[in-house]
Image (cartoon, rainbow, N blue to C red; front, side, top):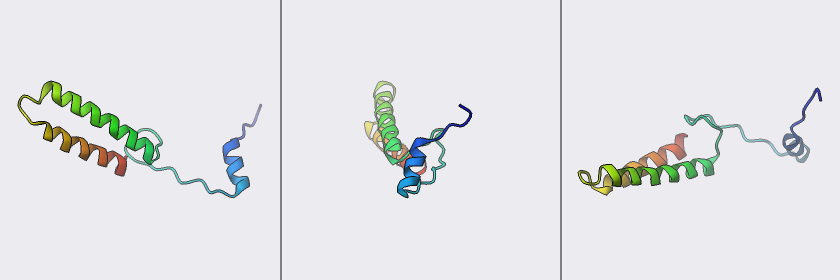
Length: 79
């Protein structure tokens, strides 16, 4: 086995499908928009739980909502 062939790329080439150029964002993995949305949702939940445990007594939960939305949009847009 001197030469391995990417069968997915060969199938796409045979069908005439152009592969999309990979995105280069700040995340250390190759992602599409759905992957970034999934990561954003996970971080939304994590920030909310962290906030409720440690900060809610001094800062209202609205701050966590705003921070989570900003982080989620940043990840989806630039990640």
